[in-house]
Figure 1 (cartoon, rainbow, N blue to C red):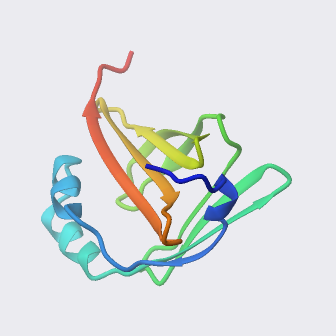
Figure 2 (figure 1 turned 30 degrees about the vertical axis):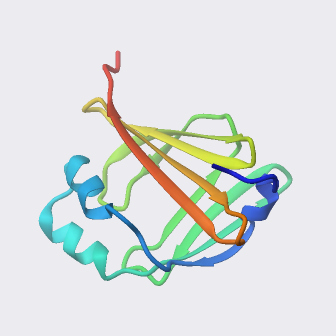
Length: 133
């Protein structure tokens, strides 16, 4: 999946170009039709930065700005764009950024970000269900 480039390759500004199967993914997460339709028209700009070990992911060009600040391998509370309160941990593995989130209903999803050999950021999403105790 990830190439030989380091996690440092993710730093910078990224413009959304395309997504595949995003509507199906959001439907499985329980996101309503109105929110899914709105999301289709959004082409966010993502800015990723790091300062002294603390990372920031910020989105622009969206109706609701998003800001995530984190230290790798440390779980934190996050509010999703559709307003759900979730637990998140971000790990760096083999040049990729693995963003794992779980909510109170037992849904867990992972978004893996990496830079491919063409210098494009790729995001692979997986959704699963597990029992949270």
